[in-house]
Amino acid sequence: MRGHFVRAALSTLVLSSSLTSACGGTDSSSPKPSPDQLTLTDTQVRSLDSTGQIIEQGNPTNANLRSLVDSTLLVLKAGIVLQRLAVTTDLTTAPLYFVGVHRVVTRSTGGSFSTWSVVGINDPSNLTSIVEVSGFGQSAGATAPTSVSATIGDGTGLVNGHFLTVGTAGAVTEWFANAGSASFSSGPAGAACPNFTATAVVTCSLETLRMHFSVSASSGSNGAGARHATISSDVDVPTMRLTYAF
Image 1 (cartoon, rainbow, N blue to C red):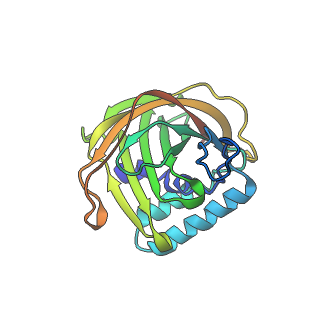
Image 2 (cartoon, one colour; image 1 turned 90 degrees about the horizontal axis):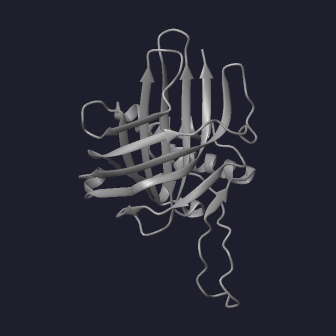
Image 3 (tube, rainbow, N blue to C red; image 1 turned 180 degrees about the vertical axis):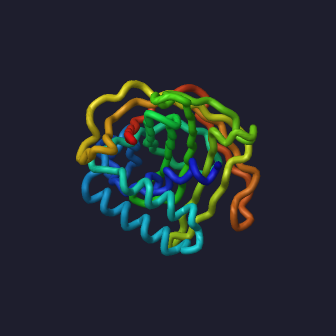
């Protein structure tokens, strides 16, 4: 089940968004603090689509990456906000910006379910590091779950973790978490997503997702060593809620 829940993420990871830094004094050569939030523009959304294509082309046999890129790029729109969060990780020393995608599938028969994917990226204009955690919850009725908490490696596959580094020509090193835990809890639906055209099947609203995680991978692809990432206390993540009705 790990690959299913990781798929909602990579292109969110490959967001391309300019960093609007606050001035730190009159010395233009001095370091400037990173902003707390980033907001995507039309140009940045088109740019991330191009970056996603490069990653796909650089990994033509990796169906998991291709699915991640395709599924997430289709939902990112101008006006979506990414939040800088304090995360403890040995993947990178750079600040990471997070955004969530919450998919809600409601069915009158056969049960309903939710998936969550929260993605953290470094400097979106020069993407090199990605942290992603995901979750899944289901119910027997027409109301999908609004939260899930579980342990990685307990056999349920309800939560998962995924790390990536992106190199030249879209080359990717991946780590899949084999230990840890994650918790997701969605707030109520808010305003409609900016620049999103709803259909009879899918609508989009903004929500605040509260979550925390601690995930680790003992090894990665290409002989890479262990990696981990932790946000130990609940934090708020700006999230797109996609609601599907069948």
